[in-house]
Image (cartoon, rainbow, N blue to C red; front, side):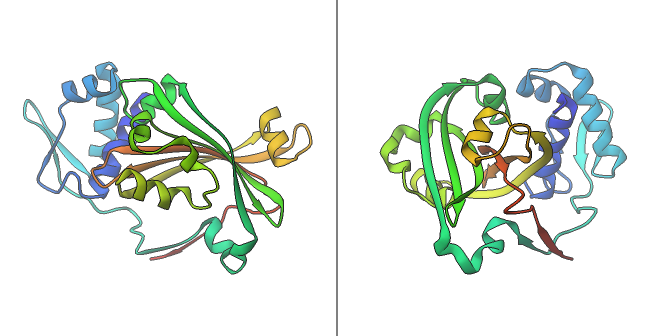
Length: 234
C-alpha cells in the first residue's frame, strides 16, 4: 500500500467511525508526518484527497476540519463471510493451530502502528468436513502475551471473539483488501493445492474501540470450497 493511501485510509476510517467528528480538527501535517515517519508529500496527497471528496476543509495555517462524515454508500446492515456461508454446518468446522511464535516484522508492525517490531504470530488452518479452506497468519502486538499463555491459543475456533475477552479489548471495525495470487509452497502445503494454483489472498486490519489497529490477518482462501461473498442492505 502506498504511503498516501495508508494515511488516507486511516483518517477516513476514523472520520467514518466517529473518532473525528464533524467540526473537529484532524492532526496537522507535521503530526501526521511524525506519526507515520514519512515526508510531507504523501500526507498532503492524503489530505487533498479527503478534501476533494468533501470530508474535510483545509484552512491555511489553521489545520483541517471535518465537514462531513457520511459514507458515499452507507451500509445499514452487512451480512456475509465464512460464518454465514457455513452457519448451518458449524459443527463441521475445525480450526487447527499450527504454530505460535514471537517474530520481528517491520512491515506488519507498521500496519499496527507499533514502535517495536516484535509481534505475536499465529498460524492456523480452518477446515470444513476435513478439507482445508483457509490458511491464516494472524498478528498481534506482543504485549497481548503479558496475560495470555501460548498454550491458551490452541484449539480455538473463533480467535477474534476469544482474543477480545482475553486481552480485554473490543474490535470496532475492519478493512479488508483482496487480491488473487499464486499459492506459494507454504500455502500449497496447508491448503493441499497443486503447484501454481491461484488463491484469494485477503489482508484484514482490525481496529479497536479507541480506533487503534489491534489485529492484522493475512489469509488465503481455497475458492474451490468457498468463494468470498457479501450481502449489503442499504
